[in-house]
Length: 199
Image (cartoon, rainbow, N blue to C red):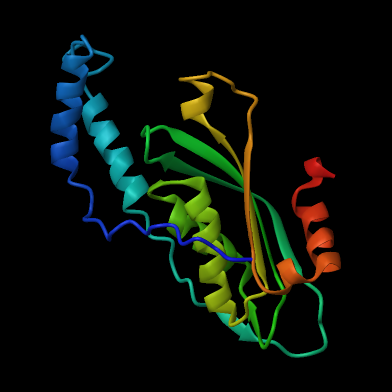
């Protein structure tokens, strides 16, 4: 399977919280609101603080791994991972349910590191397709093996709240590398567990 590269956003600067606070006050005025009324008085500061917390998020240590000893020759699968990101097209949130699978080679990854690699990509202005692709490729590098699969199912508020306004729609993307794609039996077993609603 040939993967079309998804452009990677340039490294961004840290959030300028005072400027975001100032711009939020201007936005409230442009929306016909009074930023000095009781309910909105502290909103610009809180909004700026949230953007700082979200975009300047530190996922922590990503490189914890262990030498693989023994004869374990099947896949490792994490399911039920929840994550939030923000659509770069509309600046509205989207929520992801994520499953990550890999076949250990000579290295076993710390389980929490699978989630941390996901967090490193979701705390940004993003596309679901890019997150799925980049997490799979990052984990392949960390595991020293291409045998990785990432499945994401998302609800996008840019579809639920605006435009076609369809809150029940879910978008599924997947990136399968190595034997998680080339071995039909393995691919089917992983997919049955990773995406039970599709069975």
